[in-house]
Length: 577
Image (cartoon, rainbow, N blue to C red):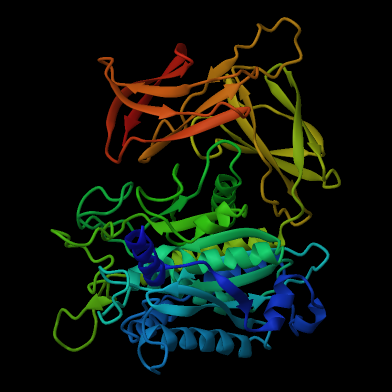
């Protein structure tokens, strides 16, 4: 027992112990985040708040050279490990975080001191250091009557193969200098505009040892009842080159390039606020940015919360009940599984900005694509802007089917002239987004047995709120006819997506409550061999499990719901990626 306790103590000292004394070093920043401020104190002389001006401005003003300059500066600190030097003026996490704070100060000075920098200080043992600081800056919103906070974040720390190696060269340019540069650039550009809600630009530490910085901020938000509306986490967001061991679902092959796709990772399936956030950001890109950008991007809503076996700073926020998502490059250079025959750059001293190929002492071939990083920054910025300026969300009821139509009644916020209905069937994406004229209207989707719907308010500027929770129509269950067949106790739903990434979501709808001792999904190949068995809880109306079938899997498989030893239905799924 003594040996066990001593080992536990050593582990907690090196990698992390309970967080204590979490505080904002700038009390004004805290007051603003909690809504205790006068917006007039932070009003711009020339207020720029018009929807089109903000979108056009963010798209035009994100600058690839500015992003590059941030990365060059970060590379100069050599090692940003959470446990590295805090005293040196030139190297280590201390010098790096002071530089980031000063960047926020300079951005504020250029914008009438409207941006409020601060540290989030917390006590926790990580890599032998007991006190740590996230760096963040607060842009106050204009509306304290409906005060909410949007966070744009990235982890600032870097590492080599050992989680606490403070002596190696760990520039961490893709992981995660790229995300940190994106946050700083958005602070620079967005501080010129006025938003209804407050926006926080945050750089966390301790991610590489266990998501400690984001966990500290999320706990701080819980403790102070901070109304966080959405969290946009950016991690490994600037590289375009596929590594040999990239974490699934990522690259098709080593050195393949993808500079026009970004992946959105979120937790949950049906009725997931996090998936709804990802769909919302994608919708804003499609409708607001796609008509004006020079290089179109593919935004892919992934099934899983993160890559296989990996995690990021959006997870602590989601665990604490906040709505959160992760932006990640389509291609990563490695799976961070250092050691052995590992040759990729991620989590090594080779995660650098680029190389000098012609010997003139200047980098000329880069591992971070600054234009790609800029496009991802624009997607973040416009998504956050629309969230920050959107109206109050609504809810809804499905009243009836009328012929091919679905009658939708808005509840909660019925004073808007228009609403939108997001409808999806077999994938993570909305198939269509319909407009409702008033709080009671009918939509006419293509005929099918299965729909999943959600709604959003639309204000006079045609800005949507975040979308509501979802309602599923399975096998035509919602109907006003008196002749419908009795419902089965359990309805096995079609997997979604069917599939396009490394994972797919299998759902079961419970129509009548049952005392279930054991339930599972049996997955079999076409020869009848069981290849996976997934336990599923059947306590909610719609219950889901995530099946990681693996990247590159092809073929047709059957999945069966088994409840207390009885088959309750079988469906087919096709792997085609």
